[in-house]
Image 1 (spheres, helix red, strand yellow):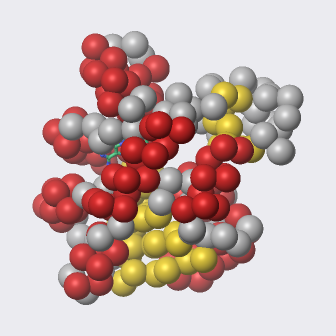
Image 2 (cartoon, rainbow, N blue to C red):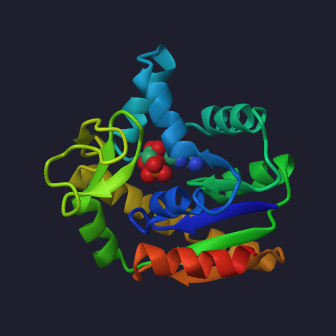
Length: 205
Ligand code: AMP
């Protein structure tokens, strides 16, 4: 079963996959996280990727597809969840060539709420755990004791650019998948992480 997660930045896609992994065995293709891993290596490719992500721009599709295929070639499980991919109809076409999409989960959240969440978001620089300033004011990761930081692409300029890109290119994918006969499950992402998790589990099971 191949599942794509759609939703504006800050709608809780990362938190959802984190919570789902405690209840479901799946392969996760989280393109943003994979790109951040490449950036962390300090490679030339990583530097190129960072020059895009820091501005909130999309990374070149060839790099993205290569990243997705490499991840899928490693220990692929019967359930695959794509987080942050596809982000445009061009990427959706590429994904169609790789596999069938069985389900799209659309985390629906108002832009104003998404902004509030992004402002509160912290990510562990060591293990990638996502949490909030409210939960961890000491900036220490509760999972691995690593340092919690603000993502470098969570600056107001980059966030605005990502919102623009989402509205223009990613949001229309909901209609695209409906037209293609893919089940699109709309989830109210303003609810608590537990409620969102329950709603998503109902759809998947
Ligand atoms: P995310 O972790 O999903 O918020 O992604 C962080 C950043 O990585 C985005 O703002 C883009 O610069 C880049 N990125 C993530 N996924 C993609 C994708 N599917 N295509 C192009 N760039 C991406």
